Length: 146
Image (cartoon, rainbow, N blue to C red; front, side):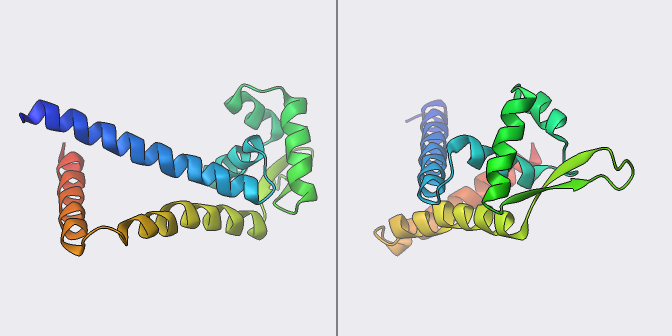
């Protein structure tokens, strides 16, 4: 098999694994009484550098402000986010993850990646897992060099 075919197969498998883990995150989020929109909102808040306003969130997600506001209200009721006044402009409210919200996102990510993948790896021969790990580390190193 030539390198082009191998490359396509590797990329296809990486995408498949990523999709499976993504779907597992959705499943775990739903088992924690989160809608997918609420889950994606928590992920968004977990990944921003500065807590956004409702307007900024609406613009970023191409949703109406009232839709985002309602979603944030539901997440507030669950204790996962809170609206806090901007320190520089008290008229502005920003949406921040609470410690409970951050813990939930971290737990979902851990369960869907580390625990889920570990369960699959347990059923694969140790030598195959070691070779896979070595190959993935080498690939990551080479891609990082590009």
